Length: 398
Image 1 (cartoon, rainbow, N blue to C red):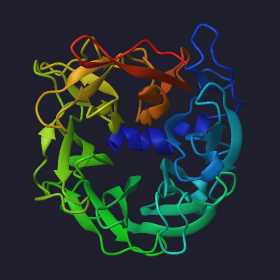
Image 2: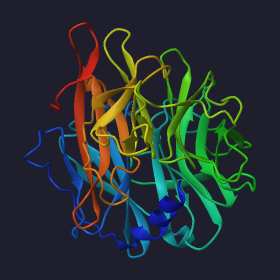
Image 3: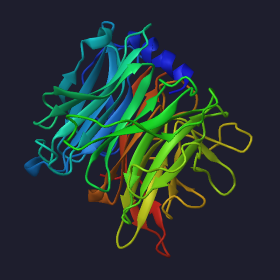
Image 4: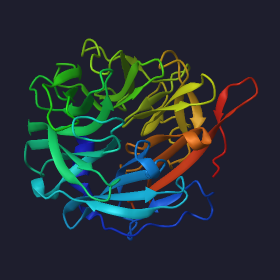
């Protein structure tokens, strides 16, 4: 998390007011629309997350989404459900946490793919960063749901202490253990670093923290890690590195999801052959097509040219890589194009979810409103094979 983002998360969100869900914009197709729009366009919602249930029996294929709003001086996570592949949405539940004056940020969702300890496959995990404004005590709190997101109960905290703890995400390592990754500000020599802890019992208890990416110069701030696993078994982590202009996005790889090499090694930068690079708040996903087609797809708050100025493709394109993260990246059209400029919440930590039904990608993003707020938009686009077999992103369709 950047210093500016910290102010937005804790102070700026005090202006939010809830409203109900909005129907899809009729000017768009059935695969795109507005999930949530504040009643006052000067207010906003942000940090969306979405998962597709895959280990939940009859509920498989259901999309579960959440995003953060600020109501009555308290953060609330609004949780929505779609049972028709994203064409329509209904409010499922509202998550609040009374600790730390009700202040939360940076939530994530995860479905357990297998039984872990006493947690059955299909159990949902929700993690959030809790910390009251003006205090140094922070905690990454983990909650679980056994009814597909309707109700939640506290499970554990994968990190706790004096200093910022932000942006949790989950994965399962090569040995089938649950891993919680997060951004950590608790060590004096580091402005911020990326670390993880491992649980052998499905999240009830956690082991000692391991640093994954960190530079002990008191300035460099790697953050906002997301991790995916390739068909080969290798893991890829995307993250921002704040300090340089625009917080350029980097990736590193691991053979097992827990050993990422020398923490001072920032890996490779995500950029095209002509130097257009991803900057700020990345999220990475894998799209698997027909046969051996496999693409890493990455969204970021912006795209920037070699001069560090916004590129024309910024917020209109996603970056893709068909070589497991090696080499140059290329462009595909974004399912949710977001206008340039606007408030800080616009396109901040947009989320991608593979869409196997349409061989493509589902995206959710905060889009800026004219009066300075944000709404939550969604869209889907399909992968098709162009002449020569090269995967490209098609026009969004239902």
